[in-house]
Image (cartoon, rainbow over all chains, first blue to last red; front, side):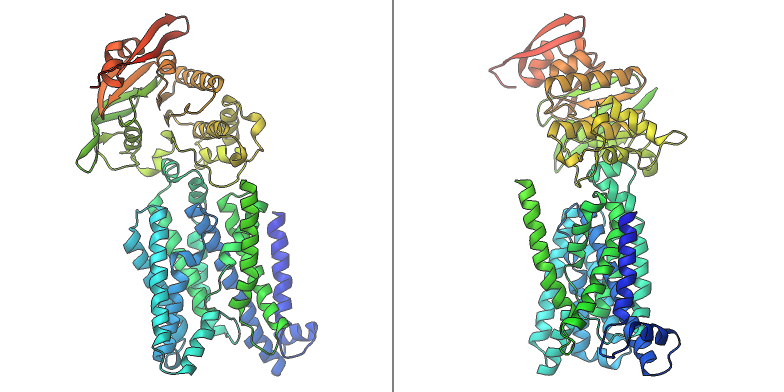
Length: 325
Length: 250
């Protein structure tokens, strides 16, 4: 309870901090007043640039956190993350193809729509490969295959890129960022994120039962097929939507559940909400950091996440390793 | 009261029958020991009875709708799997994931902890316990399901002699109280001493079924296990101590 409250307070504080961070200089109170009443340029900046950015950071972070915790619980593997089942990679491929073909330029919201469609396609391919009744190990293997395929086609798209400008656009998009997003992005991602969270929230008990293995869960009246379908579609819906609007952001889904697990004593269902809050806090904080560290250089969120996330992850592995010895 | 009925239950792996046309019944007040050499099909039989693997023939348990399974039979597999560092209390409480109707959940959980001698372990982390202690935690978890029928695959394997004896005694007591219990085990002596009924499997087929004195004869042991045993009758039950491997194989 205390942990959830702490994270919630931290989240609210970071949300307001995020609103008052950026190029346009304004005091905190000026900004907040402009958010509600301002008609001038500051009001526009607050409402159309900073507010959607802060909301998206929370949506994306929460989705990655919840999905990471759910996947780790389902696969009973602390190294699992949303990227593992190929959803992020396929969403990225969709985005790349839309940039490459001009679909992103000529169709309203073309890029996120393409990314999301590919994420859904990946899930269907995944279920075709692993089968709806297959074990968790088959799901990991099928996920790796789907990821590899998406990676290969992404490279092919880059390889065949018509001009250097298109290539750099794709490369920058792949790095993942929340800059220059609008409320249109929020409205596109929000419903899918929420649907995904609800689907994953409904399998909390099943994840707890899976702590003791698939056979015991099954003897506890848990339907493994239903659990897997809800999980896979939940992850596709929320992470697919998140990747569609801001590109691939790694490590959040891996590190956040890992960091918070010891604090909630490990039970998978209790970790879901906490990890969602933690993910939102982490992405929101990182998105503030990219604007503070290099205000004039458009440091990409995905790049910063990887720079922070990878060493953090190594540290966690090192700690686990010494605990096992 | 009959708690489990298997009728012509068979499991095939490719062309090879692993469980071959087994029919039997488990009633309340019975502690049934499932014995047989490695590869006789004990685990497969238990899993098929639970409906966890594909089979032909009928199992009254596998035929139940999924939502009634958890209130009918508890299952303790041979693999002792606890994946996350959760407390003993939380692990055992998973037995009441779908709470028993009209009964106090905490009372059932405490009773399970009490029977397995884990009351003082409540707040310990399950994954930090020794293998034997984890086996007791998982056993308590199965008891906490509060079902009339318990199926356990080698629940006493790897336990020290005292824990083996207390566990078997606990099973016997629970059977006396009215539960039906089906366990597989390799310790023929403990099976003969504590079980009210023995099911002897030989290469997937039901070779013998009945009370220990009828089934654990040297003739059967010779045929199924290729061993000879020393038999004696004591106040505590029958002793059946394997003493010799026969040279010829069957």
